[in-house]
Amino acid sequence: MVEIAYYSITGQTRRFVSKTGLNGYEINDADPFHEMGRSFILIVPAYDDDMMDPVVDFLQYKDNAKNCVGLAGGGNRNFNTLYNHTANDIAKGLDVPVVFEFEFNGTNKDVENFKKVVNNFGTK
Image 1: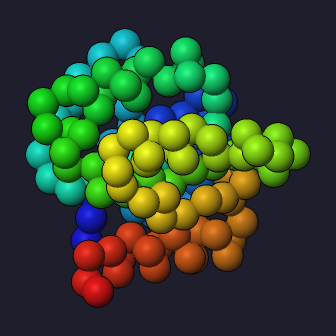
Image 2: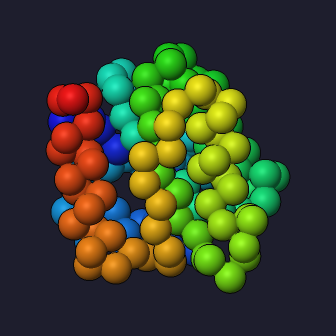
Image 3: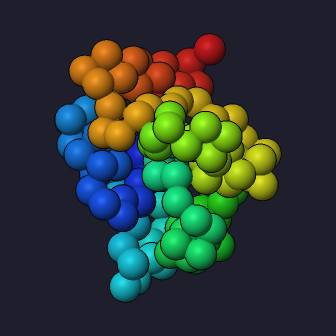
């Protein structure tokens, strides 16, 4: 099973990860320099680029960018084209897929489906 790293600003992404019951590394604003050391899916909320500086620092640290195999994004569909733009932009920059999207902190169905994505990632 692939690892998870995530960044949460308002707590929505943290709540989503918590509901999955999966262990994940939360990127820390004060010290984003953590080496994942293996393949992981990065989960990010949709916010302005300047609010993602800790995520950029995290990805630039050691082999983290190379080990990121996919993105998942949380957002608000009311933002239309900006819905999950952060996950889409990072995925494009790293040339990896967006493997999942959810709104706010995800529904029970989102949680179930994301867990399937994580558990099946790389087995196909």
